[in-house]
Length: 164
Image (tube, rainbow, N blue to C red):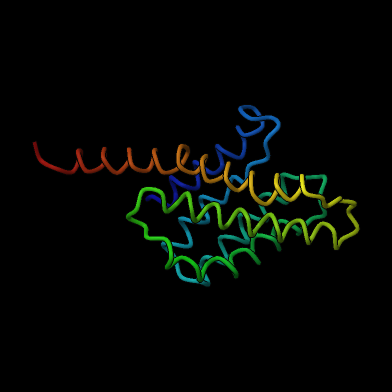
């Protein structure tokens, strides 16, 4: 049940990101993928990452179709093995794992976009914003948008299951 709730939260984050933070491009599926990587094996994680990338590809018109799918797939290949470093029971593990996934995805996506003739300029400000600041903001949003609601869901579910 937590995976489906996390997917719903990722969709809400994707759709409401431009309304709440219009100047910030958060990677909405990064916390969801962190949860998926912690709970699922490698092959199902690849399929879910591919599905998330296809969804973003269908919603985006300014990037060539398939770049997000490929980016999410390569990120899953790189970051799934690192799930053992982040214990699911720790309160900030999802945020730190999201930072890792977001940083890897940003590097991969930047590489893919530059390799497919998109004019992107690399300088210190771009590196700081895209590879450090944005992953940190993704980690902070993962804590407030994913960890806190999932903890609340767990507490409410335990209260409803336990006899009075």
